[in-house]
Length: 246
Image (tube, rainbow, N blue to C red; front, side, top):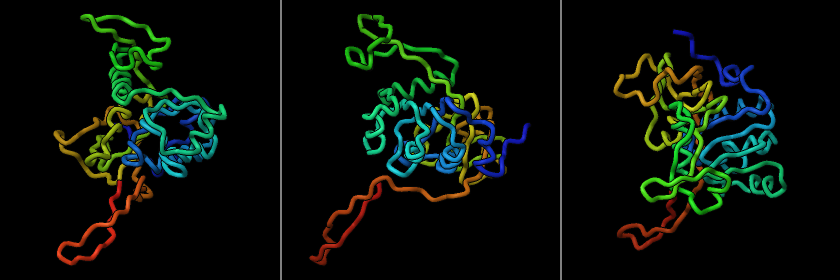
């Protein structure tokens, strides 16, 4: 078994990322973001990148760091509404955007990881999503052809990993990470904890998909939105502030 554990995120990406690559990144909002690897990707100074991810983080956090550093040429995503800089750069023509329905994006990543070059789906028929895509009809229903996504490099985050690269995620931080992990020609994972072994039934991403592994240097987890509301303290007749982290 080849050694998969690297000393740092910077070392794991050194000599791997070059200009013009397609990089797939796990996460949903800021949940499950491989934050250490994203910072290391920023520090490579690689330019003209195509980023495939559910979204582009927020201003100054997550994948927003790459936008700030002017490293992104194209974005393939489902949602970008939390990032003002993204909107400014798009409207100025600084980068290109390919919007993909969220379920279609998940299936395109899964297909790419499974070696499936394309599939038909009814999602997007009759909308701008279908522009330029081959169309067919199955059982009387119109469908369009979507291509599987294979990235040059995939970056993911797990809660636990073992030395063989087997990964296990925690709760909703799992999100797009397992799909992204399979879709990369080279997959680099960061894990909050590297353990001696993960029980086979608990493995969510088999180690065969992971080529490089690092332990998180920074375990902090950003909160995308914090909503504060006034709630009534039970039985006191007084109001107190409560917050909900999203």
